[in-house]
Length: 206
Image (tube, rainbow, N blue to C red; front, side):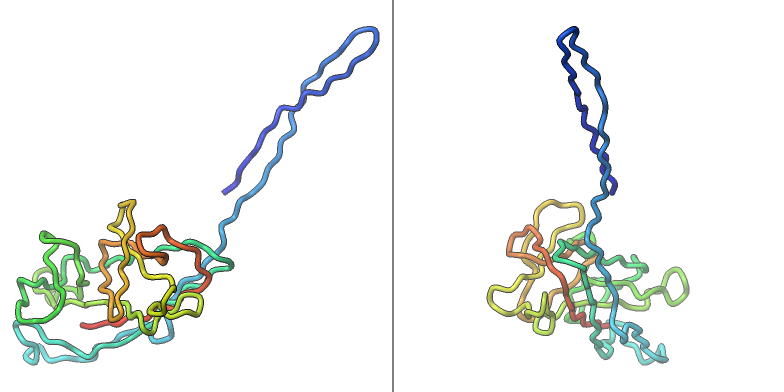
């Protein structure tokens, strides 16, 4: 962001014979640069489910092995940051109504925020393959080197995308990630605090 500041400087020269006033502009230019933040996943960011026989899957859903990965946020200096995760296979995740026997927080978007992520369609258009649950794990998540579960530490806070109000999202066990929410770090009720580093443990449950 480049900010131009323009000041009018009036220079007055007085002589005994006749006063003279001349006007000149002094232009001051500067650039305000926000601290840079680097966001990346760890080396284990590829989750290969392997080859699964279609007949091995239950009509009401089949839980597969879970996997952890880490989202790393590194900023050049203390900075307010927020994260929005997008579902690039939106609409293909099965819902609670479609897999009622699974003890997962599948949510029909008509009844509230989504907490499941799409895994695509088996035939390209109609048959849903399944869904993915993504959880933030506070016990192994650190903000500036301090675990989320430690007293006085910053918490994960969240708000619906586009909303102005923040609420605490942290628990001692897990936080279900939703593509309908924006996430940050700060005191309960917000606003977001400034952080330098965050290592967020994510549990992926297909």
